[in-house]
Image (cartoon, rainbow, N blue to C red; front, side, top):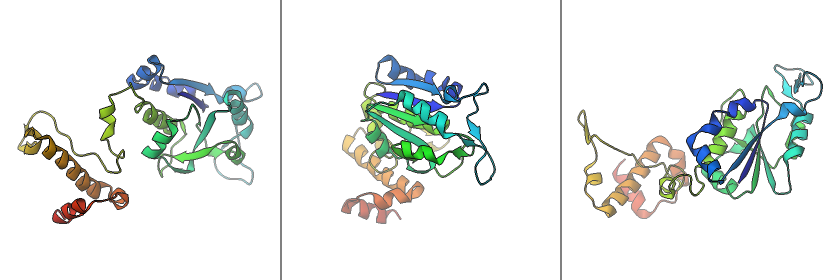
Length: 236
């Protein structure tokens, strides 16, 4: 997969690109990641990329032309262009799986108060990583790249991603490691039993309980079996 990032602050990605998973994916040639500086496409000696908004208002707006010129320089027929924006649809694990099938992703990181709305007509979709305000789109772009890289075969073990939160519609079950007894808090005996079927069932039941406790909205969408419904009623 090829991933191109359009940003005003390419230096923000220096440390990110040296993270262990990103480095592994690049070394194995599973992901080709390039960072393009939008400022190079801004005219004038000062390369101004922002301006005040028409109609007034606080803050500065990213100008459309530098963004569109930088996009044209990297876009090809098989490119899928994404703009991170507050109005985008919530980014989910289903999106991760969907986007992982793309040959070339172009991720545009906005900044300042916003981006000229005319850019919206030149992208394939808008995504949002949450209902909160960030100073720029670089962090959401990093989140998208990280989520894609970690599911690439060969980056981490496949079994490490299969039971994770959101993969099957539930939160992941609680995990434990040594010591067995931590100030009176002990590891559930079933995990020490060696009975794989009992452990499998326990993990599923705990996923149900944790999802109900921490993300009940997910449980409302999950296809509960009769056995699941009975279990949850017994543990209300």
